[in-house]
Length: 427
Image 1 (cartoon, one colour):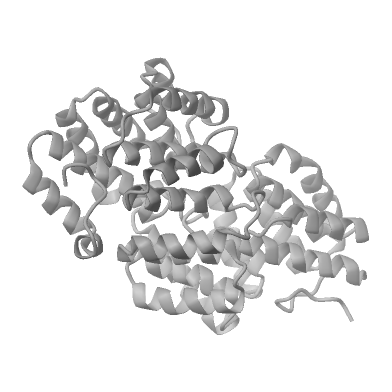
Image 2: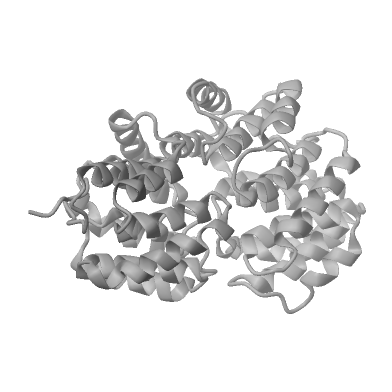
């Protein structure tokens, strides 16, 4: 009898130790606990011929921002694939596509794979969440598509904590907050150490406009979460925002310096390059003074890690950092023909952010406001894309359109209007 993973899928290893380490690794990856790559390395140490452990280690390295370390385990998995089951061969092929930048092909392969093996959660996972293959597809309607993908799997996963976590996030992003609340609370009750679960519960607080409750919940949850956890940087971003928005300015800047800032943050580069500019601009819009040295630091960091356009959500924050740092030379690389699924949105954002940085608020509105109707194409969460909503609102305030600014943001964020207003100076 073959060994099986937690979801009942057969594994091509005869080593119980390898199986157990692999299961720990999958759960760690699904929950964003620390030690994901170590668990998969332990599985390989117990059975060097265990192909899924190799490809999973490669995926973990990619998610941790160490993609250059993924090449060897990916290559070894491909060497071993022929000796595995059809499911494992298909599973390995999916991650090979992901690791080599074939997002659309990987998504189609996942859909096909899950018709035969619907409980292969590790294979389904890359198609979920706001940073997944659908999340970054660049499509209008991708939030609806995300939920439509997940809902049919309820018959296969039932109350599984990972499934409930991802289903909740998809529901919350579409404003189905009551359903999302039931699912994320059930998921956290089943697996309370999940950093993804805590993060998504944080998003529910955000969508409800419950800043004090969100801050209290996430601050308490993060007390025992290690710095090398995948979500350490981003969950601290939420804490920094809520601290700023509730008037705890010193706490907000302390979190930025200790957990978000380049050189201080531990986590994937994508989080540092997106969370830091988003925090700095929100802080400024909330009435804090601009900090040019921090913007220059971010411009240099972005140039190092994301100097070539391609992932539109990251590009949005990269051009923001360049614009606020006044680095026109770097902005030139994000010209009128950028790459990426939503690349057409990047040049007007670059022009709008540049105008905002220079105090030309009329131009900032003209460039950015037309993007708001379809900014879901950029990927990321609604909470992250609120940055664009707030830029337009703040620019309207600066041009004397206070009533229009209030109408604009209240229509976009009705829960905030009912629960304490907006973290924007002058509103």
